[in-house]
Length: 323
Ligand SMILES: Nc1nc2c(ncn2[C@@H]2O[C@H](COP(=O)(O)OP(=O)(O)O)[C@@H](O)[C@H]2O)c(=O)[nH]1
Ligand SMILES: [Mg+2]
Image (cartoon, rainbow, N blue to C red; front, top):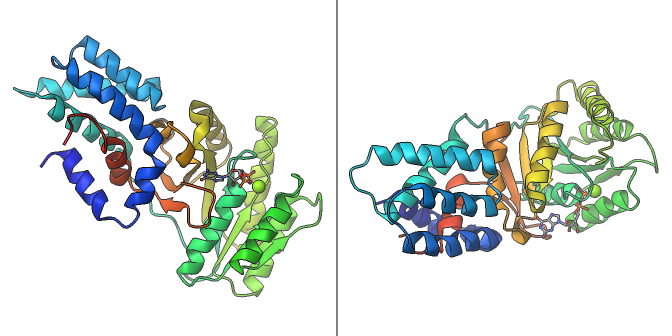
């Protein structure tokens, strides 16, 4: 069985398969429409094929560097083969995409089993931090964890109320600071309260101001120091919440945050509304940051753990002449 049929079969057995398929529908339609042309004109992996393939990858927002790397590796793989078909070429393409993502090892998300697990969500305004905080809270509550939310975005009007409302809906305690209070001081008090109340997990929703690199660095460093002071260890997870619809711009944002603070990985939101699903690959290839979760809608259940093979299978699901 080829690589693509194997991952498609695995996806069909997963309970989240419907969410994945609909979430990546816009990206997979790019693979569907281009594969038809690629298949019709297929005369081997020649310059024309590579050019068309690059266009397909760029449309899915894989980015030029990663697309070039994929093509380069494909040429290398094809040279080792005696006979290729369009279908076997697509298998090689998807294997290369998987290799690129899996090149460096991916650590599982850290949880502090002996005490409080602290999760910091960072990212620019509108990326989906507050919604993601609520979705994560809901997810961990279902695992019978005691979860507290901390509303540390004291700058954006309405941001604290937005998280308080989620807290009510989820029956989760939500610690809120005062208007215009320093976010770090809210985090400090929130963590102390979570500890005192015997919580398992505290999720801190932070402010997303991105004026200059130096300000961002100062603010993120301050938050990290405060977490250490409040709970005696670094945040267990510092996750960048990235809006997938921003594509290559999002990649630059990730680059900036990654240079500024020590990130554990990414949560990619709004995957449901975009054809830019290819962004997963350059995030890992260029920045070495794994994607841990993907946001596939606005509801509390619309956050799924990221699975590479399910993701690739979703992209390949409707490709022409690929089985
Ligand atoms: N379609 C969709 N919308 C999302 C997703 N995540 C967040 N949103 C929406 O994006 C908007 C901004 O989200 P918010 O959590 O307030 O962003 P924040 O400024 O980073 O806290 C809101 O309207 C959310 O409902 C997602 O995965 N899919
Ligand atoms: Mg917010």
